[in-house]
Length: 382
Ligand SMILES: NC(=O)c1ccc[n+]([C@@H]2O[C@H](COP(=O)([O-])OP(=O)(O)OC[C@H]3O[C@@H](n4cnc5c(N)ncnc54)[C@H](O)[C@@H]3O)[C@@H](O)[C@H]2O)c1
Picture 1: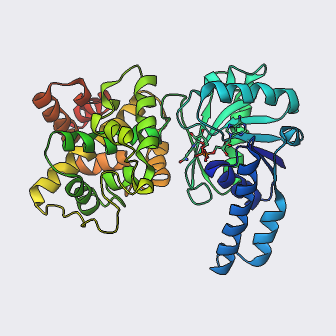
Picture 2 (picture 1 turned 90 degrees about the horizontal axis):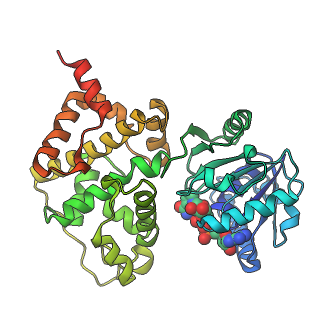
Picture 3 (picture 1 turned 90 degrees about the vertical axis):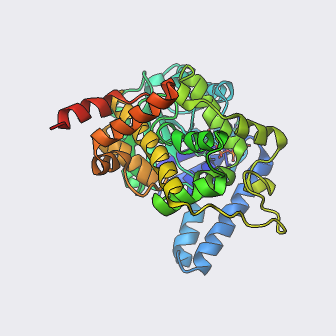
C-alpha cells in the first residue's frame, strides 16, 4: 500500500519507520526542506545503529530505507491510500493542511491525524468529506511503543474505523478505541500522575526526590513523576495539561500547577535544558530522597488512587472499554499494572473509601469519587 506522512519530526519519522517496516511504501513530506534532510539523515543513522547492534539485518535495514522517500513537495502525496498528519499541534494549521490534502488525495484515501490533544472532530470539520478522517495517536518513540489510540471523529464512517483498526494490527501495534474527548485515554488518565505529585509538592508534604522514590519503590513505576516531567520537558507536559484543562471546560482535576508554570517561564524545561525539578549540571549534588516508609506509602497510595479514580471515570463516561483503558496505560506509558485491575486488587470499596477520605479533608471537587467506583463498591459490599 502507498502511504503518506506529513511532518518529518520525531513522530512523523517514527511512524514512517513503522509503516515501512510493515512493507508499505511511505512518502514523508515536510514544508521545511531542512527538516526533510535532517529526518532522512536521522533515519539512516538509526538503521546503521540497529544493524551494528544486531537488531536489524543489513537486508532489513536497506529494505526499510528503500521504501521511504523524504520529499519537500506536497503533491508527492497524491497517490497514497492512507495519509497520516504529524505536524505542529495547532488546530488552524492542521485544518489548513487537511483542506489542502483533499485537493490532491484520491477520494478513497483515508486521512488520519496524530494529534495528542486537539479535537479530531474539529480537524475533520475542515474537510468536504470528513467521513474518511480519524485520529491515529501513536506514542513516542513510535517504532518502540506498541499502543495506538484510534479515535473516530463524530463524522467518521464506521467502516473507515474498522479498516484503521486492522491496519494498526498489521503494523504489529495494539489498537485501542477512544472517544474524541480531551487527552483521549492515556493523556487523560495519566494526568493525576503529574498533577497529584505536584499537589503533594505544593502542599510541602514531600520533595520531588521523595515523591519519585515513592512511585518507583512502592509502586513499581519505571520513573517517578518529576523525573518523567523533566524528561518529557515542561514546555510539552505543561502545554498538554493546560490544553486538557481548557478543553475539558476547566475540570478541577486537570488544573495546571503554578510550580510547573514557573519552570516553563524560567526556561527550566527539564533534562534538555540542564535544569527542571532536578539539576542536571555535572557539579550538582544528587538529590537525596527521604526513606520514611509511612510517608512513601502515603504518597504512593494517594497518587495511585487518583489515577484509579481517573480510569474509573473514563470508563463511567464511555471514553473507552475497560480492557482498552488498562491496555492503554500498560502499553502506552508502561504502567506496571492496568489501573482498573489494580483497583480490583486493592478492592473497589477501599478505593472509594480513600477518595472519600481525601474529599472529606479537602472539600474540593477534584477529590470527588468517580460514580463507577461508588456504584461498584456498593454492589460488592457484603
Ligand atoms: N512528541 C510526542 O511525544 C508526541 C506523541 C504523540 C503525538 N504527538 C503529536 O504529533 C504531532 C507532531 O509532533 P512531533 O513531536 O513530531 O513534532 P515536531 O516538532 O518534532 O515535528 C513537526 C514537523 O512538522 C513540520 N511542519 C509544521 N507545519 C507543517 C506544515 N504546515 N506542513 C508540513 N509540515 C509541517 C515541521 O517542520 C516539523 O518538522 C503533533 O500533533 C503532536 O501533538 C507528539
